[in-house]
Amino acid sequence: MLTKVLALNRQNFAVRLQLELVEKYSRPETYLCLNQSSAEIREIAPLIQPDDDASALSVDNLLYGSCWLTWTGKVKG
Image (cartoon, helix red, strand yellow):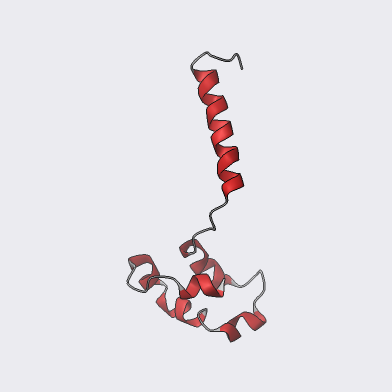
């Protein structure tokens, strides 16, 4: 997560709203006492983009294709 926080664009409006926390979580030592109940991390989590996952995209394409075939009547659902 540290590398993703470091990569955030500090000029982005949403990032600037949370800049104090972004700067805090840009330091490795901040993660030493981190736990799941840390409220601060929930504030910057939406700024982090997920990794691209090719297998997830394949499943999405399969499901959308199946839905499309059902909707167009080519396959009975």
